[in-house]
Length: 73
Image 1: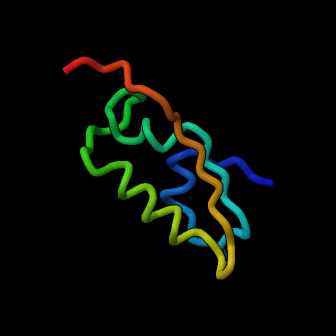
Image 2: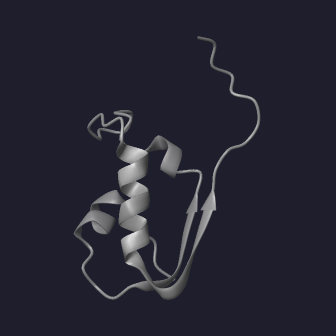
């Protein structure tokens, strides 16, 4: 098992992974909160990157928060 952060994922060129686990992180990508640049499509681009890192017949286990959003617009 390996743990890779965003810089390592972006630079990774090795073979595909049999399984990728992402738990409650995708919804934070590219929002400018953690010194990352603001990108409105960051979550979609990250999913595309993760999809490209999965080996044939590999699995992506994705955990996202569910429930009512506390945001008031």
